[in-house]
Image (cartoon, rainbow, N blue to C red):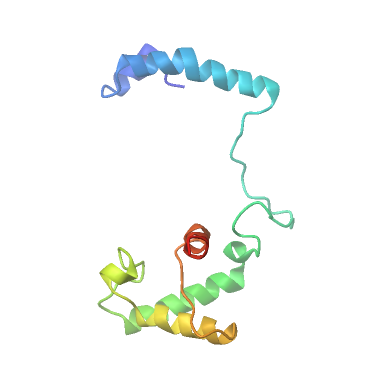
Length: 135
């Protein structure tokens, strides 16, 4: 932890009051949490075959080799067909920065699959919930 004077000198843009606050307030609070067992830590992924119900990857697609291969294959095809456009995003909302044929095609396929007149891709589950719940 950056509480010593040597570390303060390494980061001159941080005022000494910040180091004092960390030393006197933050570190003791972290120690107390650790003592009572309430200090959270990031844990590495478990490769034991257990099912992850606590993340957004509850289907396991982020760790699925077949899914990785499909994504790589699709990216290569899109890169060939889309030489001038970025594959990593439109750098903003589709409404402001432009739409992609790929997104439109995917929305049509999703709508057909769900037997609905239309579908809308959202950037995240949060955005999807916000879109639906704010109506």
